[in-house]
Image (cartoon, rainbow, N blue to C red; front, side, top):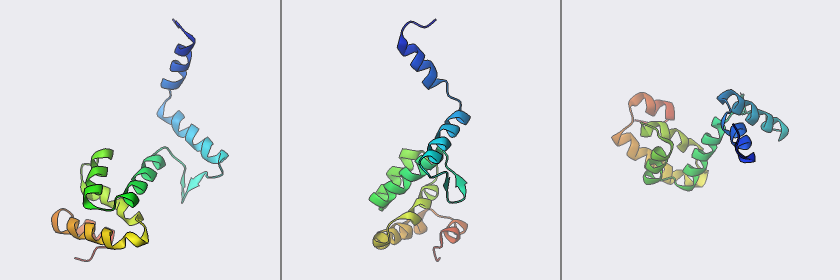
Length: 119
């Protein structure tokens, strides 16, 4: 049974299915006039992506990339390095330095090709 009004709120908040969360985010996107991001419907994962892009823009260093890797739980730094492509143009030199370090230590040739890094 419910013991307080807060139990009702708790029940409503914490019994959301993943599909319902997707639906809520999509409805909010439609209401805000952004039902799509590129070719994809707005989705909760866009929050994670936006966070990663903002982090890389603010921390375009190898140390920043490693911290982001830990923060978002990527097993491979190459997965996290994907977000480097979104860094500001004026940070290109720092990004190229990080990409150079990655290329020398961790990336496989096929990953380098996908990222446009010359071997």
